[in-house]
Amino acid sequence: MVLFAQLPSILFSPLTGALVDRWNRRTAMLVSDCGAGISTLAIALLLFSGNIQIWHLYPIIAIGSIFNAFQLPAYQATLALLVPKQHLVRVNIIVTLGLASSQLIAPFLGCILLITLGIKGVFLIDFLTFSVL
Image 1: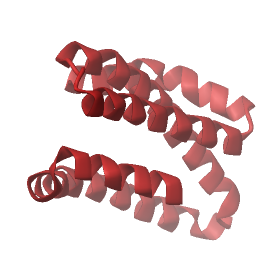
Image 2: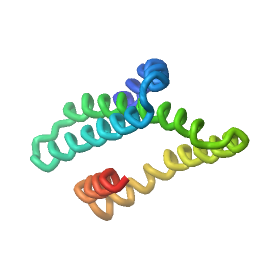
Image 3: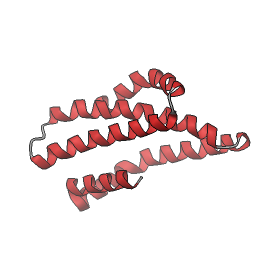
Image 4: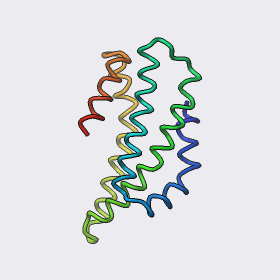
């Protein structure tokens, strides 16, 4: 699973950075968010229908990883446009700490939510946060 989640992002990152620089950043972030959301929706539909197999997850996770590869460069480029130059280093440090913290805390929090709410509750939270944000 980690291979399918990380490898497409690694392989496509050089291409996505160049494409995001040429595209409208807002559109790139919207498309990447929607693509990742559709990937999660596909997994949820397979799960709720009772037809999910482990091999279904590999291509869906890989597709979601490709969409996520577009999100970070678009976000970073937009951040550089929004923040005044004198505060850019500080803001980049805060964003980097936030990303690193989320990667550290998310698995722990995910396990707690999975134990307490079950997989269907985790998907429900995912869809609620996606629809609000």
